[in-house]
Image 1 (cartoon, helix red, strand yellow):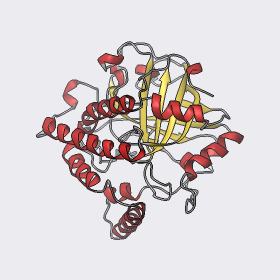
Image 2 (cartoon, one colour):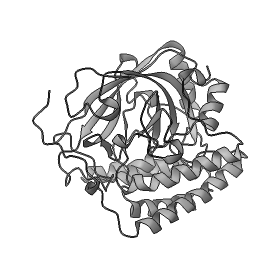
Image 3 (tube, one colour):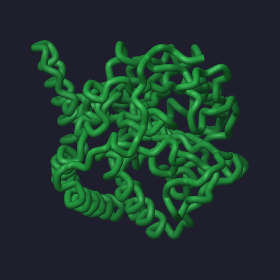
Image 4 (cartoon, one colour):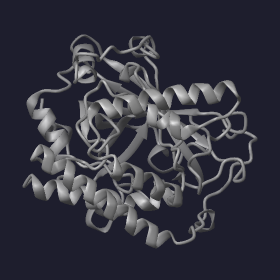
Length: 366
């Protein structure tokens, strides 16, 4: 079955290289590496240059729905099938900050048992596929030139105290609300302000576009089961709890399982739904978020010592670790192909850990 919308078909021509892109990417990656070295030296342990702090490592399944329309039956989602997955919940900074500082949250999925050649040559024969999402539908610095400006700011703030970062987040949220009252949208301030709600009630987004087989899409994962739906927007008091989010995740999964729905928003208008500027939110009136799969996590120990070490020091997540049918699109994603490789290599070398792609879910510690 097919609907009557006119979906934009994927071709190599949907991407447009940005002015000075190669030079800017090299500058961004070099700056990220400098910041990563400083933060890792502070902790005497190699950490990620983004989403360094984890709050839960989860084992579960992803079940592709039966009866999808022809446009949605693409790539990994071409046939109804259940895959084992491992997920890592995190917050965005490349440092191990207290949860008192509100920041964007991450939801990274590694899907196991995915056959077919992967894009990265060093992982071409692996049987995993990564999907990375954050609890914002857009990325404020949505193209490579804006990314370079923000990376400069982040590098200058590397040594800021926790109090300074907390004040910055509060000011950002306040300024964003004030501008909102005047009808002015400021996604940069929203992103700096972050979220102070329960991490398990968030809806997570790919932010940038990806190839979706014959088409182009953004992906999102929204709470589905009642237990996580009722956590949406619930405020978290982390005043005296530097690891409040981890504690919430561990306590929840000790008692409950959780379901999320993975959705695809297919591109119908390249002008109003641009590929090269990830700061633009794609209007749902042009194309809704359509369900494609269910993500399920049973009750479990979400942050055992073995899980933490495996998730933080062994596992890698990279948006470019994927089938060609789900290739990342746009200049922000083209930055990430070098940034993620550089960060992962440094972290594993510093911690003397092999970079491993799991073949079976049994490799993920209990």
